[in-house]
Image (cartoon, rainbow over all chains, first blue to last red; front, side, top):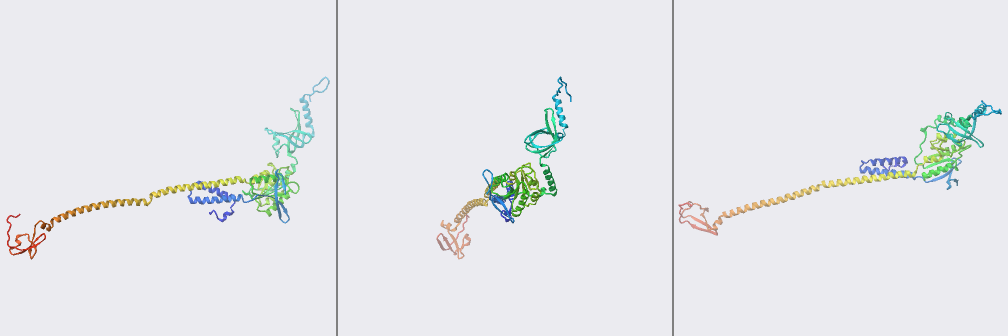
Length: 89
Length: 414
């Protein structure tokens, strides 16, 4: 499997991590020629990049959702005071 | 009752006899004989013997209670200080201490009776319908990106959920969806919000519904059928986080995941980003090290093969052959020189011999050759010649023509 094939772009975090773990295990076993090792290394780096990407995909946002008519809604920032008390802005 | 007579005719009792008298009064009383008391548990002790000792109290009074092991096996809640209960039993005297006690034979949580029955009935009904089946429970994603929390926006529950979530995974999108969590219409509101989120935000990783601890009445919204049905219908996974660890609600059973408390919900569903990143970086480090190691090994292997190859190189053989050729060349040269010398010597010998044998050299020493004319044959024998023959005498530097005037034969042959 090519490390850069298109179908991997949508791979889940779980699958990426599993792949990464499998690749490291395979390399640890040894008995690989240089080409195979290099190929696995590239794939491993690719999957670990995907994992880290997934972890950083989202930005922190805490919002309050208010329903409106006709299946509409709006959101506004939702924050808590220093003492932990919830305030609505 | 045995009464000892006395001079003043007044009745004198022993402690035992008066206690027994009091006991008789208690047991013959129609109310104390079979009584139901409500009150709050206090000083609760669950003795290692299996018996329970506690006090029931209200604002003005208290009564000592005991519930023996045989009776308390049947109670379906965990008695604890502060709990309001309804207890059935008999009030008797504990003679050894001279105290009256409430001997409890049945106990239920106060106010629970009808609610509890409703809870059990709904639980049974939904279970039969298959709403609690474990195989229909949805799995939560390992790395959630966007989650919603349906709860009171002002309670401790939302505060705990947000702070724990952000502590564990700082970059996540949390949507707080305000709803009543107790009282009239609470269940309806939560249910409507679940349906609404399914409609407008189907990409949500999961929804937490819940509230902090409270009495069974306060938690009741989470035991209502309308909410249970909404949870069951939700395509988005639902996490139920209601009250304390000991509180079980219908929502807990029908949801995809039951969390013991609101903060527990965050702990269970939100991964600890730091440790995950650490794990991935560790794997990356391993990857690097292993590949570098393989490189080093292969390099070593190459170097050793290269040495071997150099050793086996045809160049070496060629050099060796060249040396052999040089060697042979030298030997050839020497041999030929030797042979030439030999031949030269032999030739010289021949020349010497030839020189010696050259008739001209004989002439130079004073000998001459006689030729018979005109035949010009060499005269070796006297019989070849007659008187009057012409002869030519050849000497070293010329020839002499002569006529034979006589001849003599040598008698003594030399």
